[in-house]
Image 1 (cartoon, rainbow, N blue to C red):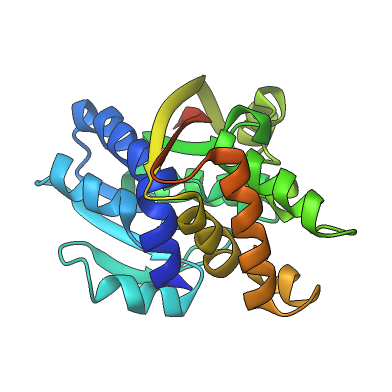
Image 2: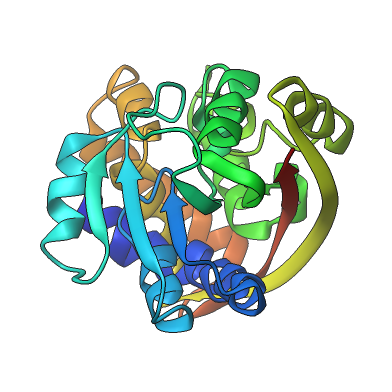
Length: 253
């Protein structure tokens, strides 16, 4: 899954915001940065380039993901970590970053409280979450394709990756965790992929949608049917589309 995720979805969905996030962090010049839900290190690599003097600790909940990524990206310290129960001491970092990971935290105020705890007073947290699925044509086309192929389609894409898009709720959860919101900005960038089929492979084989599809039928057959639907919607050959996300900054008291 990490390889498919990185190859098929990385350039299309995550690379544009990785560069954006690193650009936001560069003027702050943090000395000790913690990255949560680093995944395959797409944002991590950009942070390493933008912050050469910073000691970066990159973490993910999934030990296999940490092992796969740490072998491919030198520079940061890598560790398995649960964002809701961090193993780091109070005030260990002056910045916490997460690209498209917060949506997956079961108890978001608890995770924010842990980020607040490991931040020094005045420390900065910056993270991105996807806006509603209708704002991003690639996942929206995937949802439409699932609805066309399956009588009872999985709701993972809408419910989880694109299910934490209410700025009021985000601000409330941050405050509940002891962080003060500074900004919640809707940012629209553009992503590209070699084909709709590549995107389909990424969604179906490289994300947790895979497990839901396996309950619906043979994964290879479903992936092929969904690739055909996606191609009808997005067109043959290389595809380009907008990506809408909320980029959030907050401070520890």
